Length: 150
Length: 349
Image (tube, rainbow over the protein chains, first blue to last red):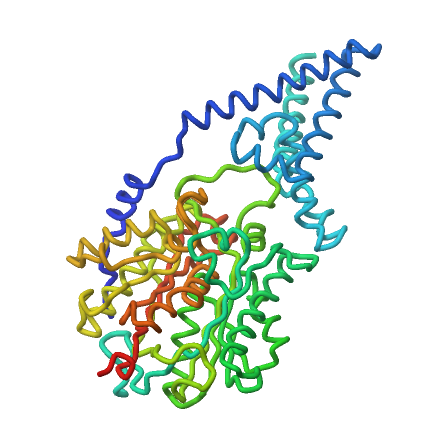
């Protein structure tokens, strides 16, 4: 039988050297301004709510989050958020609107497989890890705080 | 061993099966590319009125076969065999299309190499006298491939520059063992040889860089083909690969260069033909449909009119699954090659 006529390690090295690289600085700048803008919008929403309604600090935070999550979900549903994401990368993933996007996108995607095993089972296929490790680590922090913090 | 083998893994087809017809179905992004005007059918909407992308893809597969049959003025009942596949789990697009077509069917999976695998086996069937008329088809759909291999469509993600875009399209070529047919669009194209690919894995594990993962398989098949057939690039007008894309193509040329084979002037890649660089799909097109529609809509026509007299057509496949990727496996590649040429009579020989 013929041998594969190529040196695997040398090939991998060559691919690593020659592969076109992502423009990291450009993507950082995009992430910064889009992410910053989303946060500014969030702050504006909060200030506006504060101005218009007599809400406590906690209620203001909750109301702002609700509005931003709705906006993220809405923009996902009308097919805009994925375009923002393709441009801004982490800038649109990190804010809470990105979390909404990661839940609504599978909801749309898996609708043809039905409401139970489609939407129901796959809803958190992207956001799931965030929930698992977010809630998991908060439990650990809580236990540590209970044991040592009093 | 029988006299139709050459070297380690190449075959010749002495009866020279004819490619008599082809059909192609594509979507809007493909229609906006350089080959846009050549497709037999372009979908307005990539769901094609169905309630899932998967249903649309199988309809595309079926339509590509029907178009190829219609153009040759044949009925599906005259098909002795349908060969083909797609990218989806259990090749559902091909299986469900075959259910509608109701013909003898062999489902194949070679990832994006499927169209070449189909044509190779089809030529063997025809040359061996086991079939007179064989349809070889393959399909892929951007939206079905994304959800199977990557993320939901509406999720905002960025892709690296080596990533390729899955072509939404289905292509079919009809082989005939009885020479050119009365009403068929192609009269001059014959399949004269093939080289069966082997699985080559040089340890690339980045699923966003499939071109680099498949390039070694393509290089391996090309080198074996030239060795087995005792040929050189000078024997061909064109060596065309399936979906290596821009970066994968450059890696293929560099691997061949290491072995003293210079294909720079002879090589093209379907992934680079189907989308223009202006369309910003990073490294180019990919998917079973990429070589299938490029062959059906563009390349066969070139051979028919003699613009390309002899062509080595390779389709390359990345044999990964989402599971193998998640388990950290590297990406095995495969490439099958076919010799498509203008028949001697047409060249006046």
